[in-house]
Length: 361
Image (cartoon, rainbow, N blue to C red):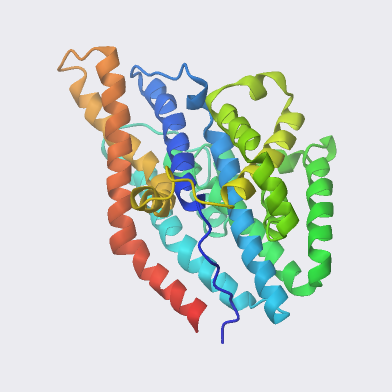
């Protein structure tokens, strides 16, 4: 029998996923266009926030999953590891492995068949092994191609939950916040130390998850929520400035920038979770948030498809640079959202229904 505790709907967090996924897409489109010799535009700071958007995804995931684990532990005295991992598998694995298969077929068979040279800097068996075993962040260092490289963040997320769920089973409830605090501080220092550079090399950014987990647990306390409400406006203003400007990235060194990002993301999620914001909490935004996993996973494939189209069109038609840039962006975003919609409705939903059954049993 599953001991999972169903969480109440938390406002704003699902819609914000769409904006984060969109930031990743508009971060990659200019890079892709530049690599293909197409005109591109990325003069605004917001076009350079793809990495930060992924970090925010980590923080969101940590907030929600650690909150779920904490509630389950508090109410039942235990954590159903089997149920937890089955739900993670049903949500993450189907689309992850689908993109993995498409990526390997594309770079190993389709591109060579079409006469495009793509340099593979890795042994195929090694690449498959690392990807299948959820070490795509290690595989990404071989530059295997955009479709496969974006999987790095999915690996980081799953690695963290392989670690944290068993610890929740072992830890007393009253020690959880203390543990997460010590882990976040110690791991952050280790991450940036010169003795353990492989943590940075493989982007093992676990501290984003753990700090947001602290925020999720403390978020339920009334006095904390009152403080959050008072700080709501300045935190949201800082959050918007963070993504639309380069004020912080240009004036803070790497360590301070990450520390600031960790704090800002955790506090922002806690602020967003207090009460609905009308702009975010509506059917359209919630649905786009629901398909954001697909948007993240499919956008590299959409870019490749649009790239082939423009390789054929540009030599034949004189299209000015501005129109080319707008068209590429609109097509990539439009195709990505369309494919993500159909994937969610006719592929992912099958596994999500199974996931809900495991939660309700």
